[in-house]
Length: 283
Picture (cartoon, rainbow, N blue to C red):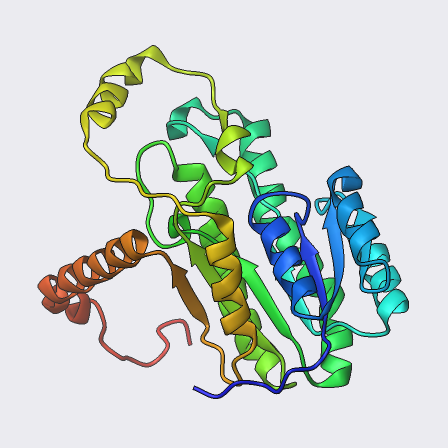
């Protein structure tokens, strides 16, 4: 593992006003870097404006508005002259059984967790491409690795985030730009306090009762722990495509991946028998 020399970088962090985004912003500023903090409401970023007058700049932005995203990115680059680290952190969570979601709720989840990250990635890539350097960090979730009852739509948005980011990583690497997908577990953030629920369907009460009886261990951490891990990630010369944050979710991810591989191998004969190369029958 090699580390980059310490130098002043320019970060752009979405969802910078609270939770993980706030701690990411704080850590970057304390390290001597410059930060563009983006949030729907920039009031909570006033402290940074006062304490880091020369190295911090905030912009209010709804990341689901593509045109506004491109405009703010242009303004951010104009302000500090470049971008080095882009953290797509803004996100939300709506829980419910798949059948309980309205069209609007599903669209809301996808607009924030998926489309917003796509718009930011599209807007910053021309700058990173031109300078042939940079690092885009997509904040996913353990929900981007596995899914379960109540988290289906949230996980769908994170699976989509991971899918496009994996492709982006391969495209961007040709220009010296890194892309990493960070998959955090539990942290004490307002993601949970602002968590929404779809309208309950009473037919699923029995499912909820089963879930309530499950003894699921949870040991949430302070977001500053995630910020320290993020700094290690962006300081590395060869950052990984994926980075899990947290011991419990690390174990859960390994178990999930191992079980997936086992099922594939159990059905290997059927999978291989479904393929037999022949000339194009339509010709």
